[in-house]
Length: 127
Image (tube, rainbow, N blue to C red; front, side, top):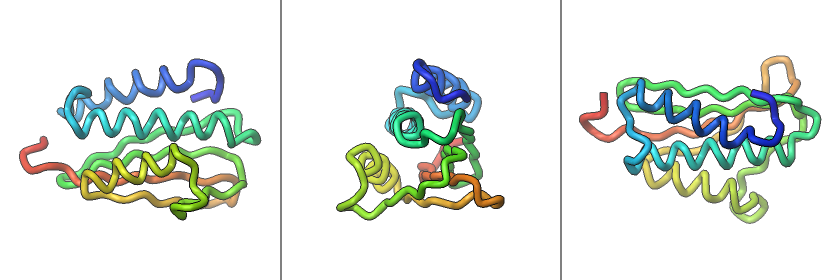
């Protein structure tokens, strides 16, 4: 997805469609958290990853886990320590924790960029 004006809205719309396919409603607590996480991470990439013209957004669902991944090509690291992270990353971490999950950052295999991973534990009965 290009990092340009309108990227956050487009990312939310695509994510909401994917959530519906996964059986997670955007109006549910989990769906709302995922949409906000995608919004925050794409906004951060657009604001801070100036060396990256685009971001890759991936949602993966297993039996017990929903993972949101937002990657960019900017080599600058993301710091997740509570005191140095911005309000958006603190919000992302709080939402993940509220759903039993966590946040991590992985460098790209080729060393050009990174991916922020947000893991949510799925509630019982989620398809």
